[in-house]
Amino acid sequence: MSEAAHSDVKLPLLVIIDAGGGEVQGMERIEPSKPSNENNNGFLLSLCISCSRGQPASDESEFLKDLLDEGQGMFAKNQTLRSAIEYAVQQSLSRDQIPTTFLPEIIPKDLCLRPDPTVPTDAGK
Image 1 (spheres, helix red, strand yellow):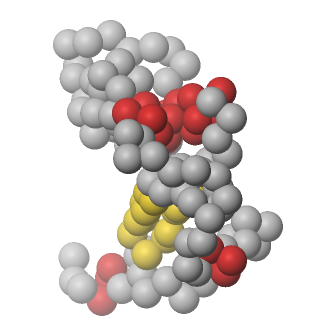
Image 2 (spheres, helix red, strand yellow):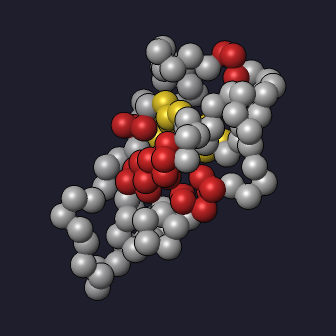
Image 3 (cartoon, rainbow, N blue to C red):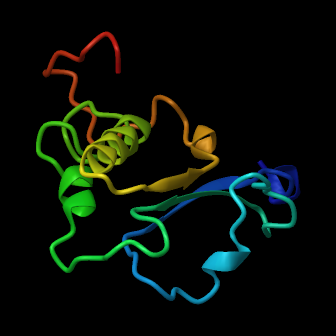
């Protein structure tokens, strides 16, 4: 296909910010009640922040460990990216951290970074 045929296609872009702390410049501009993908230069943007402003950040990121978990993380065989993010968010919530996600629904439900047809998948994934 020609380049012109793809000019209106927006690519999904996932940004993960594994941080927290008291004064994060620019955080006050992110309003979860009004997420938008208007004027994003050809990208659909999804954002995941591991803990909310005012919470302590750690160099030993539990969120990142969960996101990279061998069995449930984003590189686990047959695990979808969306499920891995949901898992990391749920684990953070259980530790009284408050992660925030914006527009996770733009991540394709079946996007898997490490598909393996030889490993059985769970029906719920």
